[in-house]
Amino acid sequence: MLLIIPSIDIHHGSCRRCIEGAPGMESLYAEYSHHPERLVQLWRRENAKSLHITDFDAMFEHNPDVNNGLISSMIKATDIPIQLLSSFPDIEHCSFWLEQGLYRVIINEVMLTDPAGVKALIKQYTPSRVVAAIRVSSDRVTLPDMECGLDVKETINLAQSLGMNRIMYADTSWEGTLHGPDLAILKNIAQYSSMRITVGGGIGGPEQLWALQELRSFGIDSVVIGRALYENKFPCQEMWRSIEAQLEPDIS
Image (tube, rainbow, N blue to C red; front, top):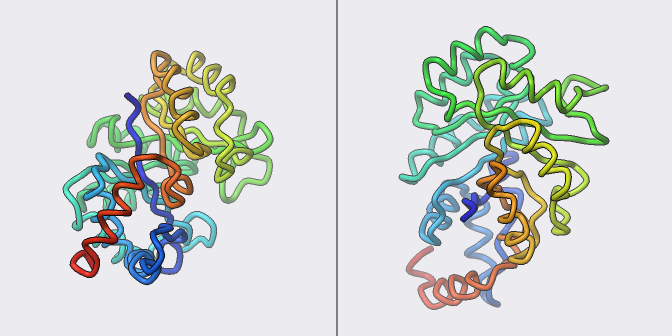
């Protein structure tokens, strides 16, 4: 089965999304969004095996350190692996988080600015803990400080040459849409790369998850899901929301 990885997007110290709960539960879930370290614990109670954090302040506002304390608290709040997508400015930032107990860093621009450093990072921490972020817009890999972007296959080749064995692949055309990722593109990328692939976003419900499951034999083994989980698009979530409504305020 595909590994489902709930996503927590942090911005200005809070989660950008709020779980939709039963009537009367709005304040509880709003509290979780304002305290992402507690949201980590909620997803863990709901049987998440891994979690994904995107640091929006770092990715889109060039402020890689503003959420350091919060991210550290999130790592310490659970016993499951956490991966972090951020605009890591240098290898030292990557090493810092891996030493802090983060399981996996998802990097992009530093592959270009310090390829030797990335190789050394992988040698020290193993390929499973260093992943290439490939976020595509109009068939080009987007990077924070590069207007024209990079060729997708060239970026994959670069990641492989540095010793990576996994990419996280996302496309702005499907992110957050609930319409599902483009399976043909994913299959093509998987066949080209021979790397393990985590799909980023786009899933809107069980049917799309089952369709993606068909590509598992090509190396696609996990998917990061945000909006669909917060909007309770999966049948099992009705049970969790019901239990939480009964237990509140004990879980608050």
